Image 1 (tube, rainbow, N blue to C red):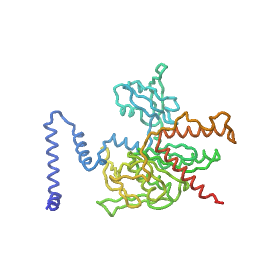
Image 2 (cartoon, one colour):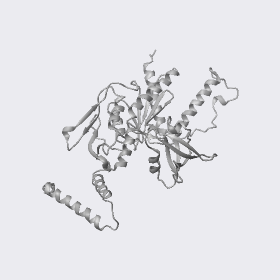
Image 3 (cartoon, helix red, strand yellow):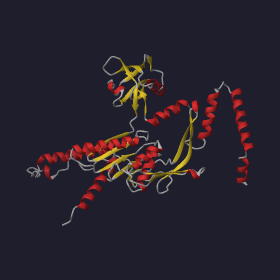
Image 4 (cartoon, helix red, strand yellow):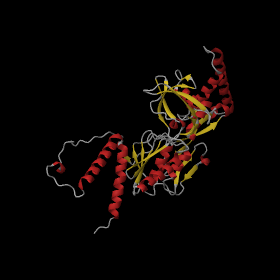
Length: 418
């Protein structure tokens, strides 16, 4: 009976009646609401309500929010090159971005920007101030800077193309650490560049890479294409992800890896947590299903749905969920997430061993090691460095220890037994 009623409600004439109902309510609000509402705001709110009622990830974006989303996707914009926040009504510089107009002009963390082209910042929101600082490449902007211990001074900057850095990397001994903060258009190329740079650094020190940690913690996702490219960067072949829709099963898509492994077959640990979503889960799921990486951390967010952004001309765009992601083994990520192979909650640990505990080397007249005091001092420094890392990031320390353990085991297994 309920199925028949549902079918009855979907008849075209009923849809027209419901649209007429919407028109009647719209006219009543326009005519009788306590204050005169804007037609544009009413219609935008109605469209957004329709889309947001479907699921948490479908929504309407007006022209401004759509433009801002494009900046995040492309990972570049015309601007000054500073990460900022608001402090007591003025813009505070968090950090200048390397190789940008702000960096070259010598702006420093903690600088306060009080005026933009002579107009006070006081009274503006952070988004309004950022919008004023962005603009056409090549256009000048004069900012008034207040720096501790100095009189206020003006700096004229020429806007340039600023790239949002989504990949950060460093060496942890002989292990590569690469963090991807978001999957914008710079993610996969940034990963490849970072690995080349780290390998080159190790080569200068006559060392070889022993493994890699890929940090996807608190990465909210981004572009599907970039997630596929990043996954493919570690896989020689095989499926990366598939996309399926209940409405259009004939439009199912499968995406496969291309040959090439940036980690050269070495051990890889992927760090995830509850903030790792969407594209991050695609990468973690693909590498886990193919046995290419050990997933460590805590269960991911569980956003396994595909959003399609459809531009609406001058009126912005609509973002709507159109399909679901599936890992190579056929697992749906939606509302389930990726479970780590090794569950490691973020923790803070401290040594319980007494600092004053006496050892052989503390005894009066104790013999030196064969290789002298210098080796002892190096060992102490290395232990201290490791302790500092443990105190700041327990999950990363566990990942590094795991890679070192795998490498040590492989070396021991390869050594001939006599």
